[in-house]
Image (cartoon, rainbow over all chains, first blue to last red):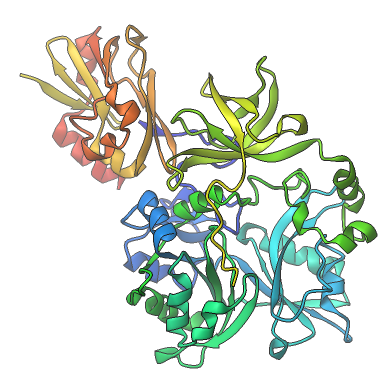
Length: 415
Length: 125
């Protein structure tokens, strides 16, 4: 028995993924590599995590429970995910300019209209309309500075992203990398109550979806300044918490020590993070989106601002605006294989006569759906929900159909 | 009296007369994690030692199962199609993958016994 099938780029053995997406290749940590650690590396190891190399970091791929149980626990109760490898930075505008207007030169989202404390998902695009990375942009609460935006980008792309920003906005804005901060996601139906209890701030439970709140830690690290975004990468309600690195362990301990009436927060590895985001229909950078896919092809047109469609002014605007008007040549779709065989990244999608019409970009077993699920791209005329497809898995033609995304209903907090 | 052998690819093979029963080891299922799909060979297929004989997929990964010996497939475990998790629960008995009629019993000499396999797994970490 040999682990194999590194179909396409990564789909391989230990899966990786993460909001951060990332193209980081995942490899078992056998050789001494110069891997970066997060402020929680020791914390994971002490909890029995199996550590793997991911995007240059030593990260937990799973704990003793394993991917399946960790996945189901997150949907039933709550999971804690260390996403400290992702890049956090402030983009600070010079000379009183609006940092949102500056960042709009690099992304297609409407950012100028973003109110303080509100967050938005967008993508850095290239001149062809392809995606260089996807990211979260927050116009922070005013007390954190009116001259700045708070960015969270993918681990594997962060060096390139930051270089891109510094080159394109040279002299007009600067980056303040937040390397002394960890990032901890808490996701699942018990997440909000657990987070509110740890911060002794009941109001956090009604913090709106895609908004930022600020709270200070209690207990041993009393006063540690935390920024909480009500967002995540699982399709569940929850927060992503930016916490000073020195207080990260204390926060992780506090979150996982006491249960809430909705359940317990348990540490969850990258394996379940990948299956959770796949069921939620969320893109993994490097797999489902990359420099060759446009936001329109990827089904991310909802993240492109109305004013931006009319005015352009971002890289690749010509292609993206044309695709918005005429339709893209191919579309990202959900895929439900008929049988039990998972179709992983790299599997070819065929029409009834055996001609290639697309490719699977993410796929595996969906623990909450209880069957294999996948995402991929097909020619636009084959993308209608329920349209039949054929998947070529290890030389066998397996029937499948186009499915609506997400595979599991989103469970975001809507007030 | 049957005898059990192990391959470096983490298959076990139990030999009784000229019938060999093949599955994956406890160590293998441990490494794979939760098994969600198993593909067994066709009955009647002729396998050479080292040929791909099936696939086992966990939530994390897909892995090939190789035939540790040559022979003709005489039976496959139909239960694994509907209950792949049996591979995690009973890897070295109930979750056998296939049986074959041994073509060349001398091939068994290249495989490991239980003690050697245990040492081999320890080396793998």
